[in-house]
Image (cartoon, rainbow, N blue to C red; front, side, top):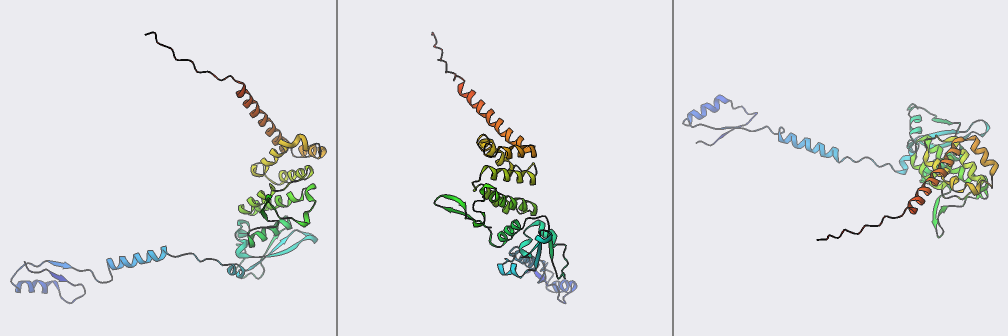
Length: 291
């Protein structure tokens, strides 16, 4: 058998010329093998593969703190009337909040002034939010010392445990974080609430704010309040009995939650006591066969 001949695409040799050459050589059969053109087939596959690899290896650009500071300035008008205050923050940080991201999306690209009105929001809570955006915490910060977990001392709130301002500060941050959709800040504020020791009147002020501003479904913040008063109401209510009664009348849900906690606790205790009093069944001796 003659050596196989190769057909090269793109050459001037025709099929007829190849057949004629074969006949001249003695009529031996020739096996024709077609070779793919350079740049097609496997080569193109290799290029496609490289493109896929390049796409897979694309790493999103890391935003540096400088990048945040280069973004447009957004003005926040907090409060209303004479108490209205203008705060400023960088857009690239504010968009971490779905609430602010949606508000910012309404601005045109060539807008010279970018302003968002927050007439109903608390100035101090907004300030805590902005501080958290830039440094990841807000004052007073959580600390751990020889006495365990706690909060930094706040000179502005010394002695404020009686009116509940220490609790209310973090409660306002909590409700703001819920509104603007920043769950990490919401969890931080809630954790700080549990690091504060307050008076009966302070706890009542805190409970009143929570039940006035949060939905019934928010058991994360409401349930601990009901538990607190369910365990201590027999003692604390005597320190502020009139305020406790007013709170129960103003927010029946509060009274119901506390009562439910007390009744559930009593039911669990009754069940436990009943189980403890029941005689334990003794194992019977195995019957002895007479055989």
